[in-house]
Image (cartoon, rainbow, N blue to C red; front, top):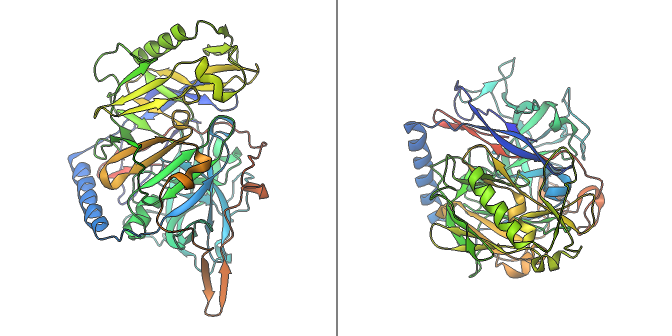
Length: 494
């Protein structure tokens, strides 16, 4: 689902939104369709504000202890089968549980409110503010839009494919599960009163925004000095799903490779991709082909990858030259000209015998090796057939979705303006990565002086075992979530 949205953070700003055509993919049918990317509107004031925020956070982080806790959280679902990855979050006292889509392109976390007049049937019950003893509305003030009664701050998200989400802003205790060292924290979130389109029909309850922005859950925790300015995601491999997430700093393994990420260029998490190699051969492309407009952007809410047209054609042709022993077959949807092959077998671990390795080379010379599962998806109608998960777009931004980082630990080291990559088995992440301390016991939230309420464990959705992927979660894919900059502050997200 392509999404374009406006979000007012610290001031009321009016702007014009200009959109560019891209392509997205429907997770159910695995085919591309038009996507809209909003133009980033920047100004000197915005750049100065972001620079000041960056300096302030660096100073703040320099005083943090090396033993600052982390929130270790499980991921569920599968980006290609379900359209997203989710994690579990608990809000309120006593805690109310929600399945939230993990999204690095969004900076607001929101869930359906009990007062919602038009919300779909999602995985969990709606949030009930009246049942939480620690809930507080965010009162109307000059820094926000307000409800009709001028009492509470509101938010409104509208998307390119005509879906929308709107509601009020509230503050409550947010808990991260029993694998987290981080104790429950107060945070601002959205309480939906209306949703339409795919937001209405999706199975997941809402969004967990991990992007850059004042309302991002990451920014809120960093501003409280309770975590380091970093987080990590690790998506399971083909046919596995699930994964892991860490809010806070980890000790990077020696094998992790980094690319610089420029927070001033855009609100998106970007990397400096210089060139690509297929089967050890560099693609013959113009210099800076991966550096157009927004550069090369990572977005956990996007399923596949999208290259500038020349880069896509070169990549496609290079792959075709290396798979001459395989048979070209039609894609799963006859309406789309997917590039698919049969004859490689069903065993994912054997795909490298039929498909070439791909290397991404960063500006600093570091290289990230991509295995076939990082650029292929299974054909949904032919056993042992696979299709390219890389598509062309009509604009110059390169967009890397979740397929590119399957079985890859991705560390968004915001404190050092870099993003790290480590190929790994995400199901064994805790054994490979050093994280300060051991998982804390389930934290407690005090409802009164004599009553402690235990935070429930981060169990799999709908009571399924933690290592089982619920197979019934098939919905339209939620794709590329790009914020727009207006004036000083990011009109980000969802």
